[in-house]
Image (cartoon, rainbow, N blue to C red; front, side, top):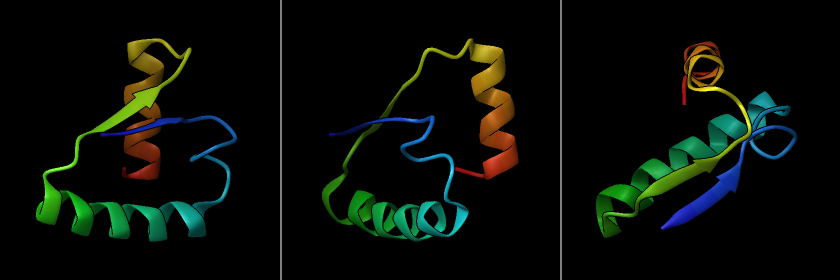
Length: 55
């Protein structure tokens, strides 16, 4: 399981987020890793951010 905060951790550096998503995607396929995003955002704001940043 991979747990991370969103704001100023994953969100804030688009190039790093893209690289991390690629690496996590490979890791997920190989090890069936689950990803958990910890955030104080509402569900609506989280879904909006997810669409904007494509993660």
